[in-house]
Length: 200
Image (cartoon, rainbow, N blue to C red):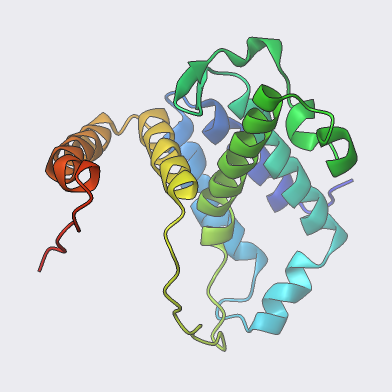
């Protein structure tokens, strides 16, 4: 059982963020204020690990992820380019172990992967990004890799969900218009097998 009251309050705020509504912005503001309190003001990597290795944090982390997983199944979602009504499915698809998941059908497998991506992004946006940066963190060497279209689409989908859930429809519209303009500009080069020129 979680004994840290800040973590208990943070789970309540995460439930509000996941469900959306008029109090969501306040809940996120609470998280932004409370999560850093669990760490020293200017923590080292070791000091951050000392917190995240505690039983309280591990239980909090698992509960937080489940909150977003349950929220994922509460609304229709885009799965492999199609909007799917998930009312016939539940969070057990997300929480299933690998052995159980091997017996899933094609649609369940796609839903599981999409739910895992959604939870991972939601947790990062609402928990991980609020942890203070370690003062001794090493700058990772940037290695250029091939972009993952599925991961990029999942990020875009999550961005629309987050913006609309927080009532930021103006920003969602900016993103939508930007995507529309981008698709129009790259459609011909891509379909014709030509290189898309980089913007200066």
